[in-house]
Image (tube, rainbow, N blue to C red; front, top):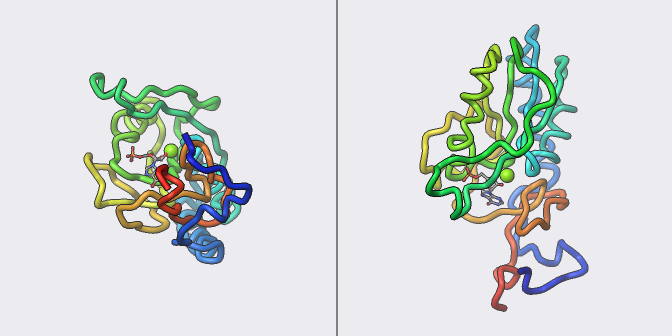
Length: 190
Ligand code: IMP
Ligand code: MG
């Protein structure tokens, strides 16, 4: 439950960590790097819903080589999935990845469990993608519990819960144009 409903999302933000201009500048660098690396290759971006959406929308506009994109949705590893250690793919790709150079796009790699337990990368490789790499807007390496290779990273963040620019707290705050941290009272209590 959200303890306090404000009419202005911005009022719930205690601190802006990465502002719009900084996001835009870094994403244009990532786009240039990806464009150079995938020149002449059949590039397909695979976004993991829903957090990737704002990042992916800006990233594709910063990439100059031809590309296609598609989305997957995966279940989270809540208490119910802990025993099985499996994250299910809830929405699969519409398009084939065969012989495509796949770049998986994430909002944030935190523990790494979503990518590991979903076997998404292995799954894409088994479908004969030409290559499978990972691009994440944010990386929280201090929280990593399993090894995940991040090939492209927008920003490294400290061990704190962030929202905005696609990232949510209980379904909210994805629409904020920057990445920030919530005021403590928003989490309940105050
Ligand atoms: P992981 O499986 O622990 O690597 O986390 C992956 C997912 O957890 C991300 O795609 C987010 O949906 C969510 N997540 C992890 N850290 C944060 C955060 O700081 N803010 C919002 N969502 C987060
Ligand atoms: Mg997510």
